Length: 246
Image (cartoon, rainbow, N blue to C red):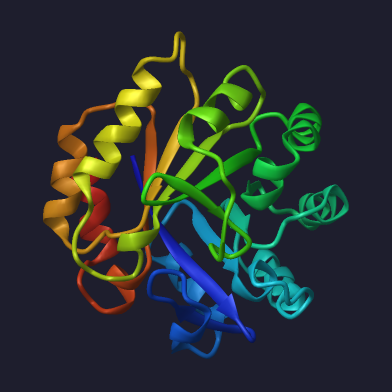
């Protein structure tokens, strides 16, 4: 299981939000390229990169910064935020992005995303952004009208790599992982025959106890957990965190 540090881009700066609210951003680093290099230098094996401007409908604001980050580090990058058409997805893959995280498009046009995953097998994560059991889309501002079971049924036999599940209510709040939220998800996937997708958990990581509790679940499908504000606020050291998960 990996600890995966996050860089959320807004106006070409590294920021964090609370509960995904656009107006809640706090700048943690004016130079996200240097931040990405730091993560690689301390031994992180993957980077979670989010284009917040694109997620909120402001396209092309951070593209050059994303390009610079990709050129500056060699570790894999998983990128999400505003990937709402196939042309943009292909553009990111051509740029060298290793994995794409697709939210709104995967909920609204699943057939297109399944076709994309056929072309880029094991390179697509479906973003399941959950608020009170509802899957949210468009920067978490809109209720999709879909539930978890609806989406799992659609993608179970596809060639996606897996799911990134986010507890919106807990995201960026530093209140600890919501184990009930995680266990509810795990119960659902255990009911799916031959489930073989990777799971990455986001939202709520606060301290080392969260990591120890997550490790106790001992589920082979959990690929990693994303660290955002927990790192930037100095709550966890990423090297120590990875040792716990090992």
